[in-house]
Amino acid sequence: MAGFFKSLFNKIANQAEIDWDELEANLIASDLGAKLSTGIVDELYDLGREISANDVIEVTRKRLSDILPEDTPAPAPRTDGKPTVILIVGVNGTGKTTSTAKLGLWLKNRNYSVRLAAADTFRAAAVAQLERWGERLDLPVIAGVANADPSSVCFKAHKEAIADGVDFLICDTAGRIHTRHNLMEELG
Image (cartoon, rainbow, N blue to C red; front, side, top):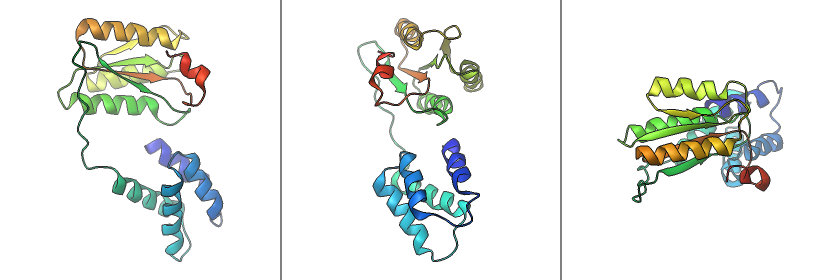
């Protein structure tokens, strides 16, 4: 989430005056959705004063925290001896690797066994970044060789997770968007 706010801040920090349409377009492009984005812009506009980038961040954070539940219960793991697989997908630079680690820790703190798969084999240092998170959080990480096929890493991790009786397997993938079917098929 920090990457999201930093990116949003950078888009508007150097503007002499807020372009409301551009701000709303940036919020929508950040996957906040039209309704939430419009609500944020309306709240900022209603302040009736000059708006700073920090105001935008503060209102956006408040609006997001208002719609997110206090504590979401963890999903129940599968009962057939196979891990529940969570595929982390998104465009480049949105914090997938960090979110993978945070989700892994969240599940671990709820007494589930977790394995992380470093399937972002194309970004320099992505595997090393997830491995560092794994070490810090005491979460095992399965990785492949540099530039390996991402699906082979996911397959290997899934096979090992089954053998070890792991509850959740979280696969960190290279930047891609869910509407690009050919890229999503690579992971299948």
